[in-house]
Image (cartoon, rainbow, N blue to C red; front, side, top):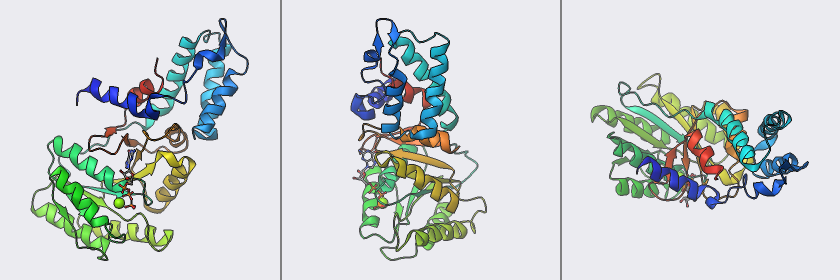
Length: 307
Ligand SMILES: Nc1nc2c(ncn2[C@@H]2O[C@H](COP(=O)(O)OP(=O)(O)OP(=O)(O)O)[C@@H](O)[C@H]2O)c(=O)[nH]1
Ligand SMILES: [Mg+2]
């Protein structure tokens, strides 16, 4: 898809085209003056959209100082000030996933609680990297949930990449270990490993993820090269809590935020930016195979603050 095609889709999908941030911005003005409670109204919208207290305060302070300096006199200027502040917040976390060719195979773990969109994101990632010319292998490391393996296999068939599995109840670390082994001997560029979203308890889940990491490090002490946490934008503050918990337990290197199409919110990106220095690698904006985009702060802000 062309860059302009990708942008048009992003704008149409984010909050289904009706941005929580800019809806009725012009109503915040009377004549050529910002109404006294305009910033309060924006603050409320940011909080309601799950931007969190820290990011909200930070943004409002930036707007307040622009206002004090007399630089916000109409809704166009307000939009511009909002865009500038949002970019300042989001640019530092918009770091694309680098996959240098000399790391082979590149080992990418995908983690996250159940239902956030891990398996779907893996299908989309496989498609994305296959199109980029990489030889991709999937590893069905979610051996806990019934039907998880078949779900990944279905994606693998759709994308036309191989998927290694040992069936339900197998040892997850051993599935992923074997996949890496196989990728090495068959000259694959990238192994994407699915993992369980739920085990008997949360601490079992973290133990299992740590074990998978240890086992894979027998192949390559620097693996996994990316530990990508998938969070669901519609779960708001829970997504931030999950990111903090997984980061503490297994050490994350990046985040993918899904379902940004299905919500009138999406402020969770701002909360994550303000609270964690973790890169947001990809955003999910639908259920289809092409509905994943590398996170681009400028495009995101432009799509959100529609004119
Ligand atoms: N609208 C929308 N739906 C999504 C997106 N990503 C995933 N989904 C849907 O979310 C649901 C759960 O996705 P899965 O990929 O099965 O989630 P999972 O994290 O693998 O779930 P478990 O394996 O149970 O832990 C599916 O119905 C997906 O189609 C997205 O970006 N937008
Ligand atoms: Mg899954």
